[in-house]
Image (cartoon, rainbow, N blue to C red; front, side):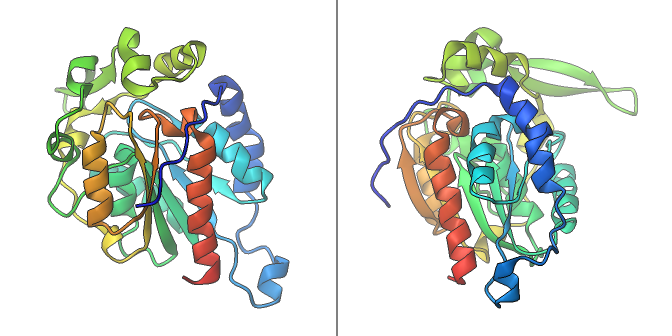
Length: 284
């Protein structure tokens, strides 16, 4: 395992970040992936498109500071909204996003998004690298709740509240949200309070069924992977993150960060993604 990266607390305005995703982010995402770039003309591997998948209790704006850093270096980035309704359906949706991209892809998942990318990338030859940011890396038959409970340390159960929503057949489904007064401590410890309050107000609920649904594919068994362990994570025990990273043989960094590492520490998160990008471009 690589040595820990010292913590850098970064103040991130999610409202400004959301605007960035809606403007500059779209501009990069909509450039034709088949554009004739100089690297391609000289026979060098094409730069991959970086696809960022958020997890539960967050939305695509949680990647804002990472997107800005990647775009400043000229990378093409997509950060789609994840429905958070079920592992199979969420993975199918993300697979449709991947299928819209021409050329190699570095696929990044945070939290529950890690389970999604592990399934969505199965039999997707354009995905050349997987990057997990404080994320689930399930094997076939495992679900997120099982992996959370594998090691002690998660306080998510006490911090969440159950909401109900209507299903097409007239019954009700259950979804979870983090209680607003506990959100910063649980999800984003160290993030400036105003930013954490914005995150809490805009958090996306996840269905209980999605966290209980077993994985049916494990793309990390064939695709090289990288993993960022967040040592202050209260959602997924850091011991579970290390165990999943070791099982997947991921190239791993450790950061003193909360679960929302992309918000609190976008520099190390971006750095790990760029390591995967460089590996893809070099063919290693």
